[in-house]
Length: 171
Image 1 (cartoon, helix red, strand yellow):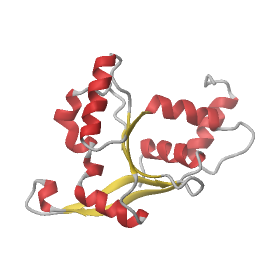
Image 2 (cartoon, rainbow, N blue to C red; image 1 turned 135 degrees about the vertical axis):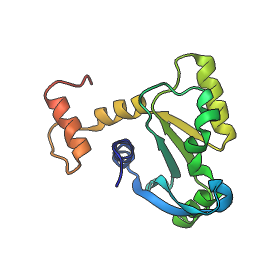
Image 3 (cartoon, one colour; image 1 turned 180 degrees about the vertical axis):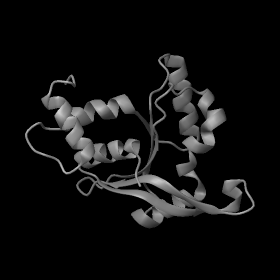
Image 4 (cartoon, rainbow, N blue to C red; image 1 turned 120 degrees about the vertical axis):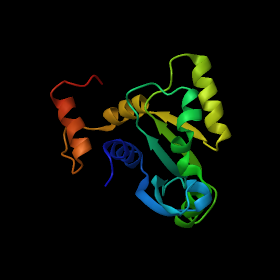
């Protein structure tokens, strides 16, 4: 089952023309789990734009209670960057047919101070992240892409459509 954060990010990429595969499972090796045995995990999204050929794996960390700062790398880095471990990258290459793809991290929101933002982006880059996208950016773009006329088969898009129709979203 896809959580709401992943569903929002999925719809964002779909409306931008990407084909999206969710929850792509892979077997983590013992060395990656830090435990006696291996276990399964998943890549949140694998995306492919058939028009441009752009390919990427996407890790979604929608922790909306706080702003993400460089200290998160120390305490939560294992979760933030888990989609970049060797087993995940190998599985993504199998699905995409190439090792040439972007690694995108979606986070709730980075800290407001430029120094903090820059430091987090630097740390993310060191871990192999090519691009960081914040949820406010995704939501603003998604809201602007949702039309009020048609009905959507997606609960997420239908909810945004209704909020727009009744003037509850600023566009």
